[in-house]
Length: 223
Image (cartoon, rainbow, N blue to C red; front, top):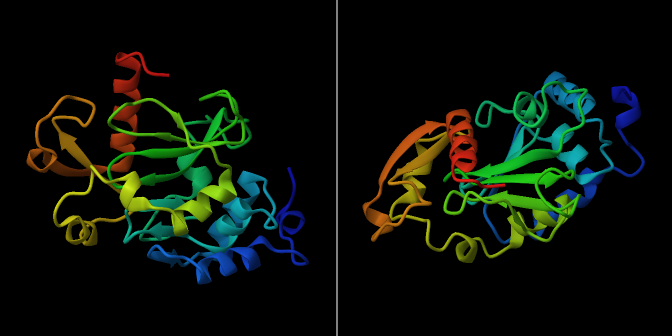
């Protein structure tokens, strides 16, 4: 494994480019503060350099909240999003940090959708970001790599992407949540229902929601 000094790139850091993207962002975002020791640990476990977009986000941020916290991009972890990217993947996509994952969870949204970088285990195109939504429980190829995914989160048409899943007063509800919590709907979003606004909503731990999602996906024969 490369050491922290080998992973930190000071001549061509990816954070410089990301800061340019942030200046041009059209969607609301919040950069969460990092804790230095935790950031170094997550970077070493991820084994990516800070020249890369992912490495820069891990090393320079505790995570990024998009659209008032609707999307949570994982960094090294912060009180408001207390999940480092490798910490979160351990026990889910890998059993240990030294294991090569078939995919890497990189972000999620407040309604239990999960974004992952494919390494061959969730689709036909390695290196592409896939999305696991609650209404289909099927991994969907978004047709972009990690850097373009970050660009989409900052500038994409999120209203169109989530147009049927934002309830009245969602921003107020998100103010009372943190990045380790998810909104669970009942009946489930993958069932047939008449009025989305009439579904009951409960705030649950994101870990609980993720494990339930995988369990339901398996029961329903999803990939």
